[in-house]
Length: 384
Image (cartoon, rainbow, N blue to C red; front, top):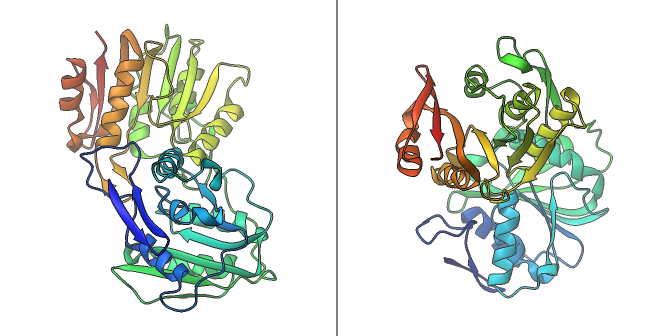
């Protein structure tokens, strides 16, 4: 656990799920720079008496520090929401002091202060600026924040094109601020998101179908090569009552399972609300809407009862924000083992160099390579 010091006090903050071995903080220099600016360290303090909206607060550090001003948090991440709830409790802040919204929710009707942690992907920033632009006014204070490596000319161009005139601060501790003056008269056009594309041939039951991708979804303009390889090497899908597409993205893996004709209930799970919206749109456009499908925002398999799943299909991430780590995959593997029935199977597609077969053998006591090529492997583990 780490302590963030501000003029409003000191806050104990952690990421979610909390892991005492995790050395990564729940905030960074960009969060500190933004809070110092709001406090008035480089000028007068910012008036926070109106409606304050915080977009992209990664672990709830910003809204926890600003809780006295009753901010609205907008995030694409289920983990961020859980971290925020835990950090509010940890710092004895009333839970209703912060309104938690997802990127798919309607923003507040009028925003007086808009604080933006620049996301990793420009597409999500573009989409959210379009969604928020009608709710800001000429007097809205707009301040973005990010590490120097996260703010590019293209980032500033999005602010300029969608909101209004934009400039940046000097760098401090490798962080930078973005200052934007909203122009309500700006002709910004409509958001280009969500987008759709047709799947290629040669990938089984989903060949040629159209998928929907909301902004921020992994590989939103094409089918990634790992998923393509997985679709070409899926296990026999007949005879399964409950299949989980874990870390579903736009849902093409779960859609393939649903269309296999096995009559299985398919649960789509992701921690991204944008991804879940993509998966649901993809499913409803291509499958029987009365078929058994559930869409669940969760930390891996945490929302699935133990011993209720026959097959888990997953292409796990190996990073969280910009930190490369196998912690997420390890939680997904552990959760899958708990959720599977005896004889149930976990199928994983992954980059060969990640060596997930070692973890799976340690956890399940078995693991075999079901398919391989120079870059990717498909691994199969069975719960005995």
